[in-house]
Image (tube, rainbow, N blue to C red):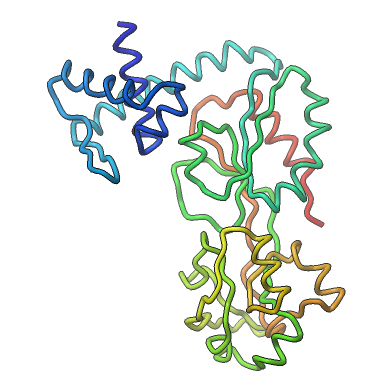
Length: 298
């Protein structure tokens, strides 16, 4: 039975991680041991649970049923441990969370010392990451993400919202005059690699409520870092869509100007994501309550 459990855990982690290598890193085993576990499990069941090629893995129909059944059992076991560990108001154990780098440094890190003092028996592991995949693959408890996110299987709590602006330097605007929406297509842009500004979620709206789609724009520069994009737009390399909290000081100092300021873009959400489980651990509840009370981007 113990051997079967090890094989099942290896299989579940391979599926959650999307690769044998990532599963091995998370479980602290070698890739070959993970591969042997899955192969022995398939041999014992006399079925193929996964289809493999050089780039990816996928569940077979039988594998999908097996995964769903045992993932449910694994979640129940984890919840039982959490309930036992967190009886009453005891907040302890390891809390794993992540956020984007720039937002986290500015708004989350200053809140952590007091939270840690409130719960001295809690261990904290905080990482910067912009991807949504890490919540499952890295077994995180919480993830703070920005923007109007697509639907997912994760639970979410909205913590607030913020404005986003079209910005450029005065020098750039002198070189690429922009007086109407169509002019945006004629200038170089600096885009965020993880966001698609032209997927229908982003549009320009004037004071009369009229909505205009962004034209197809030329993305000459791209990064997955808001800090990099910020530096590039300050260097007059292009137009960028940036969070107001990131560029407000630059606007006040006239280092940047709003492009087409008579138009606004949709406000973006600050969202707290966490696993969709029936019993939320006390450590997770405590952090959610703390952020809800203390987070402010004013």
